[in-house]
Length: 82
Image (cartoon, rainbow, N blue to C red; front, side, top):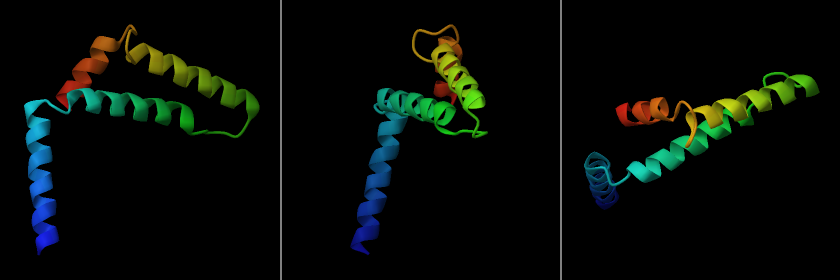
């Protein structure tokens, strides 16, 4: 019972921090990390040429929607709407 109360208290504190905007910088960093990991981490086809194309495409998309990219505004709006 005590562990459930501690877990519940932690969830309430976490929710309050998220609603107040305290976690926004960390959430952005985590989203950028996961996007970079998902775009460059998975190999669709295990062929050297396709792997190079996929790596380049992942890097370009990550750079386009990441910090300083052309689509940075879209990435910011999408991250705030989530």
